[in-house]
Length: 124
Image 1 (cartoon, helix red, strand yellow):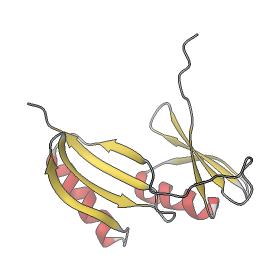
Image 2 (image 1 turned 90 degrees about the vertical axis):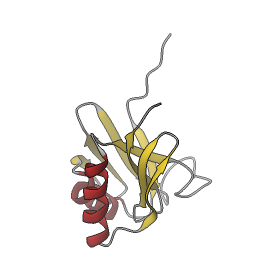
Image 3 (image 1 turned 135 degrees about the vertical axis):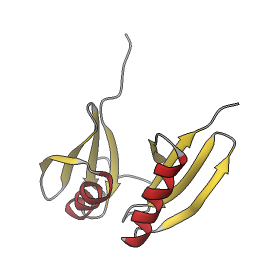
Image 4 (image 1 turned 60 degrees about the vertical axis):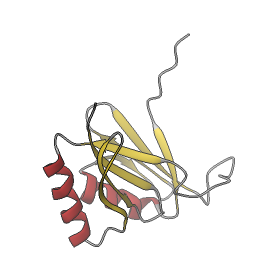
């Protein structure tokens, strides 16, 4: 059997607030929403669930920042443009644009501290 993940779930304080953040800053489409859960479409097939940390069962044992959602961009200019747009909108930036061994990148955070890495991969 080959299992393939179809949904990534982040535990959040307020699903509606988080859904609005991802809709505005990532361009995610809200597929469903309730007071305790929201599901969003990220691109054609990726799904992001935003589940209230106050009602999730079993209760989550950690908060945001332990993992990253990563968004590849076509070139360095696109990385810089998104960094400028998010900075102007007040999205917290944890790491300014920088060249690392895998490519050009920056890291921002969502309202719950989940890390959002934007990058352009650059190889050898």
